[in-house]
Image (cartoon, rainbow, N blue to C red; front, side):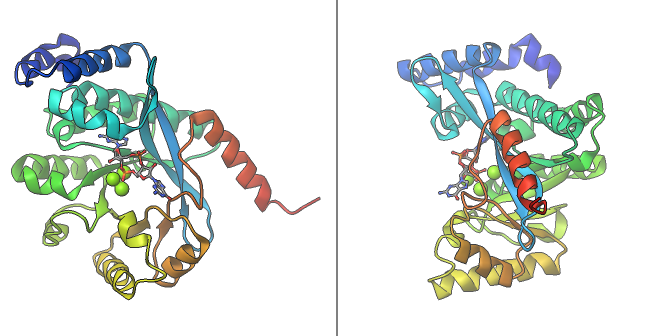
Amino acid sequence: YQAKRSGGHFLLHEARCEPVDPQMLSLTAELRSAIDRDELMLFLQPIVKCDTRQLVGAECLVRWRHPRRGLLPPGDFVPRAERSGLIVPLSDWVMREALAIAASLQGAGHPLRLSVNVSRRAMVEPGFADAVSRYLAAHSLPVDRLLLEITEETLMLDEPGSRAVMQQLRHAGIGVAIDDFGTGYSQLAYLKSLPVGQIKIDKSFVRDVTTSPTDLAIVRALVELAHALGIQVVAEGVEQEDQAQVLESLGCDLLQGYLIGRPMPFDAFRAWIEKTERSYLPAS
Ligand code: C2E
Ligand code: MG
Ligand code: MG
Ligand code: MG
């Protein structure tokens, strides 16, 4: 994983597979130097317990501070990075940065669990699980300070490859969450055979959970299924208090969404934690 990154062979090789599209080539070239120029940034979005609203973790969401185009969301460059192979060094940067942040938070007395999105392409790169273990060890972080988010497609599109990596991660004690749960192929059988510790119910089900009996029924069934299998449930995209109330009544474990907090840069996240903690202290 490491050696390939520094050697650059992988990137050169992958670049040959690119279709010749000037716009794409220029953005890809820019992204390659963005990693070295420190133009990428991780935003952190709080994840809290559903019943007490206690902070337990945060999801790391990448942004690109593009010199001319401004702050770009991942949708503008992650899919291109996946097609060009740049997702491998990008993911490596995200993982290192996330663990540096986890270590810094730990040092400040906030032992939070950080969730990191991992694309299929980066996950099946040889040595992935070992690299993650090494980075954790380099910061003396316990494995439960990290959770890897993958999508159902990752498991389905490349069965043997990603499943083998899942087993290596299990062996290393590193937890895996299924992101955007319910929107993919939903071949639920994999839940029985793979080490999945958490599912994240997609925001498309959360949005209408208070008004649509169908969405309510789906979320209730997903929570029951997950709990029967010993899997923790996060609701994503929670924007309103009444959604949070319904999700709590359904037994959802964790909440994430604008209601709790927006994705924010590290300093703002630190300030958010301190403000939230103060609001729990008795007024003096
Ligand atoms: P995701 O992992 O499902 O992340 C949740 C997305 O929902 C984030 O969008 C977040 O900003 C947004 N969100 C959070 N709360 C709310 C809410 O209450 N309402 C609404 N409407 N949206 C909410 P973002 O940051 O634009 O990320 C989009 C996707 O890009 C992510 O979806 C993830 O699949 C991908 N991504 C982000 N960071 C990385 C990364 O470091 N590596 C890889 N491979 N993919 C990433
Ligand atoms: Mg995610
Ligand atoms: Mg999601
Ligand atoms: Mg998504």
